[in-house]
View (cartoon, rainbow, N blue to C red):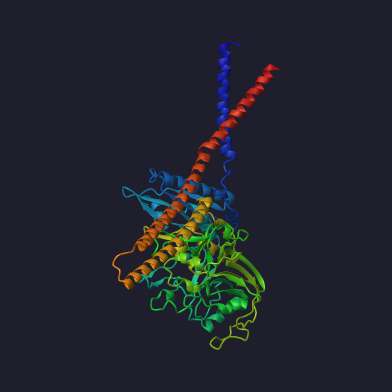
Length: 627
C-alpha cells in the first residue's frame, strides 16, 4: 500500500469516526433525553417520591405556563441559568405525567399580548434598565378554571423549588383545602406590640400554612368549633372558659385532630410583655392546659425550662459585647430529630426558645413517639432563675445535665376519655348529637412543649420585595408544622418534598472545636470574675483599715497586694487570649488540611494512578515484544 492510499484510508477513517461520534451524540440525545444520573449526596436533582405521588394523583389535564422574559434577561446570566434549571425540572414533571401536565413556555416581550397575560395573572415583574419588565413566574390552570400562581421564582428559594411547583400542582388537583382552626392566646394573627408601640402583621407561619390549608381563627369567647374544621391548632391556651374547653373536648371525642403548643415560658405572650405586669407575678407566661394533659396521661412541667449545653444557640446579650450561647435557645440538628418518622425525617434544623419537656405519666395508655428532642447534655432549670438575667451564661451555675434526651415534640395516638365525664358544664349545652364521655375512635395529636418556636424570629427572615412579602426560612420550623398538619389531615404526599432547604454543609468539627474553646473560655472567665471579686474585697478591706488607722498613704504590704492582683489579672487575661488564639489555630489548621486534601492530595493521587496505569500498560507491551 503506497503512501497516498494510506493517507486516503486515514482521512476516511477519521471522517468515519467523526460521523460515528456525531451520530452517537444525536442518538444519545434522543434515546437518553430523560435519563439523569444524580451524584449529589442529598439527591438534590432527583424528583422525590412525594412529587411522583402528586403527579400520579392528577385526574384531569393541568396546563402549566412558564413566563420568562428571555430577551429582556439577555445580560443576566445567573437568572438565565436558574430559569434553565426551572424549565428542566418542569420538563421532568411533564415526562412523568404521561400527558396530564402540559407545559407552555412564554416569553412576555415588552408591550406584547404575552405581557398582558402575565399582568392579568398578577405575576410579579422586576424593573430593568430602560423601563422594561422582567417576568419569571409560573401559572397553573385546571379544567374547572382554578388558577394557582408562583408570582416570581426567587433564586434564594431554589432549595424549595420542587416543593413550590408540587404544591401548585397539588392545589389544582385538590382544590378543597382542609380547614385548620386556630385557637390561641398569642397575637399570631397580628396585633399591637407593647414594646415597640406599633401594630404587627400576622406571623409568617400562617403564610406557610395557608399555602395548603384554609386557616380559620376561633373566637375564644364563642365557645364553639365549626363542624367543618378538621384540625385544631391550640397555641398557648390560657384562661379558657368551661364552655370553650368543653368544645375542644367534644371536638376530640368526635375524631378531631389536634396540634397542641403548650409553653412554660412564652416569650411572645402579650401579658408577659406588658410592663404593667410585675415580673414576679409568676405564671402569666405559662400555658394553662393541664386538664387536657391529665386526661391524656401526659405532663409538661410549667415550673421549669429545658436547657441544652451541647445544642445551645448564640444570642446577643446587652451586658456582654460578644454573642454568648444561651442554653435555653436550642437548635436541634441531626442529633435531635427523629429520622424514622415521616413528619421529621427530612428536617435539617429546628429551633426552640424556653421550651418545656413532655413526659408520659403512669396513666398514659396509647402510642407515644418523640419527634424532636434534646441531646443527653441537657436538663431543666427552675423558671425563677430566668428572671432579671442580664447574662445568659449565669444559667450554667444552675445547670445539671441528665443522661437521657428530653422530648420537646411528640406524636401521640390514643383513645382518651372526656375531660367532662359527668356531662357538659352548666354554661355549655349538650351537642346536637349528645355528649360523648369517650372518644369514638383513636385520636392523633402532635404535642409541642413550646409556642415561641412559631414566631418569625426563630425560623425565618421576612422581607418586602417590591410590595410582596417574602419569607426566607433559615430553619425548618415551618416545614415541621406543615408536615405535622399534613400528617394529621391524612395526606403525606408532600412531606417528602421538604428538608432540602439547607444546601450548606455544616462544619461539625469546627463547631465542636468552637464549643470546647468557649467552655474553656467560660471557665477562665468565671475564674477571673471570682478573682476580681476577691480583689475588690481586698481593696475595700485595705481602705477600711486606712480609715480606721487614719493613714493617708498606702503601706508597703498594701502596695504589694495590689501589684500582685494586677499581675494576676494580666496573667489571666493573657490566658483568655491564648484560648482564643488556640481556637483560631485549630480552625486554621483544619482549614489548611482540607485545602491540602482538596487542592493537592486528590490531584496527586489521580496523577499517580494515571502514571501507574501507563507504566503497567507499557510494561505489558514490552513483555509482549520481548516474548
